[in-house]
Length: 258
Image (tube, rainbow, N blue to C red):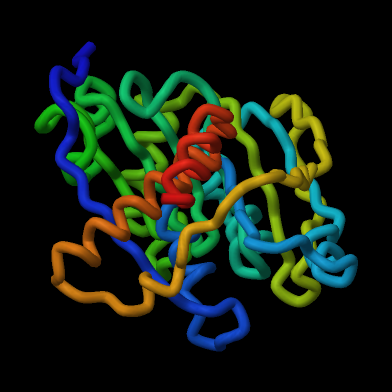
């Protein structure tokens, strides 16, 4: 098992767009991070009842023990992937110590694997950008490719690997959204998957006495050091807001009054 001995090199990316714009990048940014399992939104003002109702559409998901071979079955691809969007996330230990599997909303199965598992699996992948060099690998399989048909060489290789080297079921959270209705729909699982249905809960929390930083600075992107400093401060502010740290609220209000 490999542990991080020093911070991983990272970059901060900031994007500005409007949800009202047809070119909004909000959905794209969320979908580019399939391993994430939680979304938190901060609004600078209270929402009206009409605005809150946009988030109150009833939705549900399942917790089930699913073998990876299930995702390449023709019935699953035809009944769900080709008719809507399926999102799945494996449960277990952290991504830095164990295998993590995700199915994004575009039909790509993503396997983030330890070095030992990757070498045993036998499918091509790339070193993960996160963690010690070449200690984790990422395998991506587009389940909607035309070659994902029984009898095709690529399909049969994947099937053999899932049946023989990575055959144990993973505990998954999984949800299916129908393209026509844009609502979550039922998934029919074999009894051995022990599937249980859960309602997605949205939690609204009002934060009092919080001073929002000026977000307009994001729209004036530049290479200026002062702008970069402002962006980092906004990023830090979001972190403090997420942690609900009262000490930080006092610090923020104190600094804002200077």
